[in-house]
Amino acid sequence: MSEIDYDSNKTFAAAVERSKKIEEDIAVNPTKYRVLTGDRPTGRLHIGHYFGSLQNRVRLSKMGVPTMILIADYQVLTDHDAFQEISQNTKQLVIDYLSAGIEPSENVIIYPHSYVPECNQLMLPFLTLVSNAELSRNPTVKEEIQSAGLKNVNAGMYTYPIHQACDILFCKGNVVPVGKDQLPHLELTRTIARRFNEKFCKDRDPVFPMPQALLSKTPSILGLDGSQKMSKSRGNAIFLSATEDETAALIKKAKTDADRNITYDPVNRPEVANILMLISLCTKEAPEAIAQRIGDGGGGMLKKMLTEALNEELRPLRQKRAELEKNPDYIRQVLLDGSERARAIAVKTLSEVREAMNMVI
Ligand code: TRP
Image (cartoon, rainbow, N blue to C red; front, top):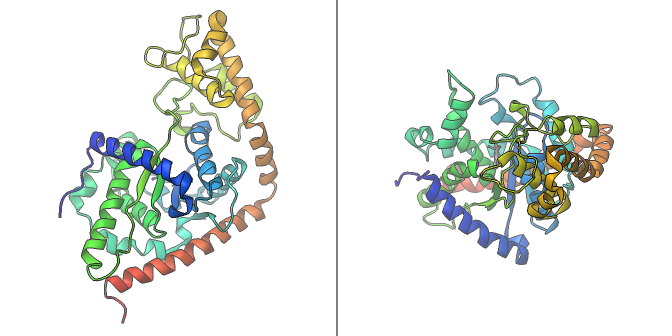
C-alpha cells in the first residue's frame, strides 16, 4: 500500500484547489454534500472560533447543506488529564453554537461522539488499515505532543486521527470545514476511505466517499498578545460568553506597537493588523480604510474602535446566550435528539461495513 503523504505544501495546495471547487458547487447543489465538523469540549468558544469557523457553519447550514456538528468528547482524553468538566463543557459548546445562529433541525445535527457507539465501532476495522509508522509521522499529532509537553504519550493520542476518520466517515461526510492544522487528519481519512473501498468493496459499490476539506476564507486570528494563535490556554482570547466590560478590559491590554500612526501592514505590524482585521470582520469595512480613518489616533483609538465594534457585533449573540443558559433542559434535549439522529445514520453505515467485510452470519 502506498504511504500517506503528509507533505503540508502539497496537501495544502491540493486542499485549497478542491476547497474552491466545492465552494462553487455547494451553492448550486447543496444537498449533494454533507458537512461534518466539530470541536473538542475543552472550554468555551472565543472570537477566533466565531469568525474562523462558526460563521461558516451557520452559512453552510442556512444554504441547505445537511450539517453534522460533533462534540469530540472522547478526544479530550488524549491530551487532558482533567475529565471532570467534559459534560459541562459539552453543554457550553452547544450554547455557543446555538447563540451564534446554528439551528438544530432534521438537517442540522449536534451530538457528542461518545453517544454514537456504532460510529465508534468503526475504529476496529479502521485500525487495521493504517500502519504504526503512518500514525507516528502525523505532523499535527507530533506538534500537539510537543506543545503540551507530554512525557507519557498514550496510544489514544496516536490513534485519535483514526477516530476522527470514524467521525467523518460514519455519516459519509464529504465536506469537512477545518483549519490547516487538521489537513493531515483529512489526508488520513481519505486514505482510510480509499483503502477500505479497495480492499472490501471490489464486488460492490464503494461504501465511503472521499471527504474534502473546506478551508476557511477568514485569515487566522492572532491572540491579543500578538502570539500566533488565539487560545484559551494562552490567556489571549475573548470568549463569546465574556461581558462587554470584560471584553473592553481584555482589549485594553492587547499588544500594539510604538508607532502612533495606524497603518494596515500584516507583515511588519502583525498586532495592529490583527486588531484592524477584527474590526473589519465586525463592520465589513476594509482594514486599510479603517486604518486611514484612525490615522494618528494611535493604539488607544484603535482599541476603542475594536471594543465598540465587537461588543456591538456580539450583543445579540450574548443576549441569546444568556437566555439559553437559563434553559439547561433544552440544551440537553438538543444533544439527545442529535445523538438519536446520528445513531440512526451510524447503524446503517456500520451494517454496510460489516456486510462488506463478510462478517454477517
Ligand atoms: N480534531 C478536531 C480538533 O481538535 C476535533 C474533531 C474531532 C474533528 N473529530 C473531528 C474536526 C471530525 C472535524 C471533523 O479540533
